[in-house]
Image 1 (tube, rainbow, N blue to C red):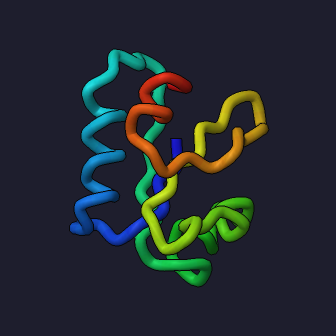
Image 2 (cartoon, rainbow, N blue to C red; image 1 turned 30 degrees about the vertical axis):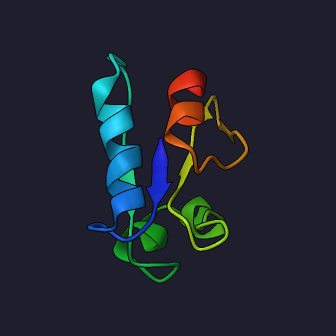
Length: 81
């Protein structure tokens, strides 16, 4: 699960809280808060294609080398995870 957003923004914190409230024993959670030239994007180039949608914190649920459509709503993230 990749969350794109500013670390301390309320919408980012809400998405992080949603993911952390779920029992997902094999999850990998990454917060991308620095943009396409960040350390993570340099090491994992596919991350540079993920971004915030409409200026809101955005989550991407990825599985088996494919990421689902972007999610900005915590309840929708809970339903998809």
